Structures are given as C-alpha cells and as structure tokens.
Length: 184
Image 1 (cartoon, helix red, strand yellow):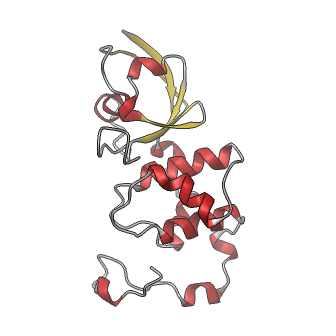
Image 2: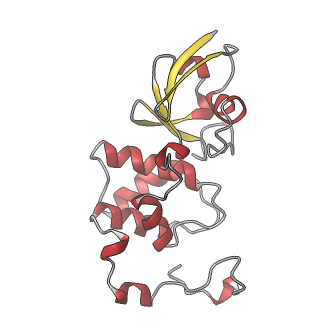
C-alpha cells in the first residue's frame, strides 16, 4: 500500500505492507532508530512518537494508518543535532541513565508541552509519565525535570545552589553508582 506522510518535516512516500508496524517502518525503512521497541504491546512507552501533535505508541500503529499525517520522532526534536532545552533540562536533572526509555518520555513530554498541557504537580506529572516504564532512574529525576520545564526553569536560570545537591557521579565516569546520593 502506498504511504504518504511527513516525518520530521520531510515528505515521505513509500510502498509498505498493510501489516507493517509504524515502529518497524521508522526503524528499518527510514533508519530512525531513536524510536525504541521494548514490549511490542504498548505498555512500556519506549516507541512513543508524535502523530499530528499527539503522543502515540508506534508499536500499536500500522504504518498505513499514518497516511496523510505528520509524524515526529525523537530525532525531530533536534534536527540539526544540537540539544534543545528539554534535553538540557533532562541532563541537568539526571533524568536518564541507560537511555532506552528516554526517547519515548521526551516525546510524551514534548507533546504535552506543545499542547499547553504540561502538568505542574508531582502527582499530575507522574500520571503523564505512567505510560512509560523506566527501570533505571526511579523516576524522581524525570519528575524533577518535567517540574522544571513546567515552572519555566531553564538550565541557564538554575542558581549555583541548585547544583550543590546534584550527583557528581554518573555511569561511565569511574564513580561507583552506590556512592551517589539518594536524590539521584
């Protein structure tokens, strides 16, 4: 079946099998591997992309269903390769570790931000994130990052005292993960 859509602002035209999943189309046909495939049941959120401004699970969507639509993947958040504010805030709040869930979470948060529906309370943020499974972070860093985005706090507006409680260690820098503070 013929598929015509926009992916990250680029026009895409392809002949696809009717039962090809959108996640497979993005990863294997378009080589946009930032969209991760975890559970293949829509439960983990790793495959989340934006479809006409809404966060959707690409593992539950057939590619042909997006005919005529606009898609954005995590690669579309930084088309020039430069990190944006959402990336910087997540980095500053240690809101990622292995990174497997991060693309889906970034797409979920971006969709809410762009619709003007970014929650501001911890409970509401946890509800927004409830469709994403992260096995590394314990979520607090992710919640803190979303709270900062919701409050309009940019990385450049953080006060020096904000960094005092931040972890100086991270995987890969030689520090033991057991030496990290509980807030990380």
